Image 1: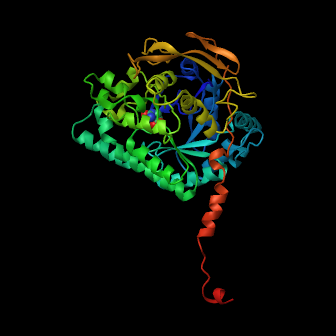
Image 2 (image 1 turned 90 degrees about the vertical axis):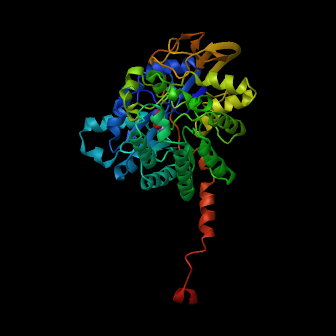
Image 3 (image 1 turned 60 degrees about the horizontal axis):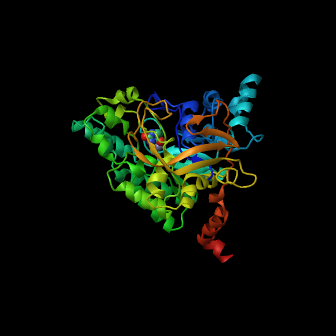
Length: 464
Ligand SMILES: NC(=O)NCCC(=O)O
Ligand SMILES: [Zn+2]
């Protein structure tokens, strides 16, 4: 089948003052072991300092062992950011140098050109509606961003939680003396995810642009997506492996190291949400499976030993995704093998406009192929996984369905537990703008304009 594509990971990303511990090599090794031949999400903040952001990623990307693409995070708004979004979307050769860069030396300008040429071709931008005081965007910024995304043919993605209310919820827990990992889940209940999802959907509707909701963790958020889709809105919902198969009971574990492993945002929900998210995936309400892979080791998680707000957010999943989805959804008859290929690969390639180069086995496609043996069993855990993390939220999990071979662009990069990819073997994959989600938007915009019956001509104008 086509090699899996993980639409949403964070490898070696700085987050909550901590750097995630998987880098381009260990993370990619883990991903290839999981049968994933490429993935899409590295969050680079666009902060009016594009070149610095790209420069810091260039060295990491040079070590990539698998094909990869980028999303970019928009965390503030000004003309420079707006301009940088254009820079990132333009294809190779069409790179625009922002006016600020032109003031620098030729060498600097050339470097900018090279970096832009190398990393342009990004067609998605991510907006965090949570993490007040750091990444969170206001409605005003989100609106500006949605409009800009639409004009560029780029997909707007949202981390949907009401960040203001989360901050209140956190303070409420601290005031109640709840400082442990369970406070994390209690401070940001499903209603806050549902509210932000609904708000983002409505703003995207107002702008008439497609929306991609990352890590849908609750039925509250899923129901908002279902409603919007029923009404014909172009909204993509991405559940992640942790939300599909885990529940929040671990957060109440008396052992801090165990409980803190499960801290991520939005939180892993109480049992029941997971099964309903699986059902939504089966029926097409949710469209593709990501991981939001963002690992911190036990030392890093221990930063929040006395205050859950300081526990770095994130769990593993890049290596486990293909196996767990096969075991929990195909082996149980919830989805067909064809659906499995769709939700782990094809849909992602289509949404990010790289199909059929990726996500298909066709003449002319990259020969990205996995061979999964449905009869072979797996047993997961930190001692045997390929991530650099000393913990796994899937510790002790057993099931059926093992990726035995991963082929990337025709080369066998993973075979029976052996990694055959060297650092630098991966290629950057440009994601062109105006994917299928943008088809016909001009027509619906025209219908909208025609429906306005305005301006009404009054007075002299009407008489003329
Ligand atoms: N999800 C999470 O807890 N960590 C990764 C960063 C984010 O996407 O929120
Ligand atoms: Zn997020």
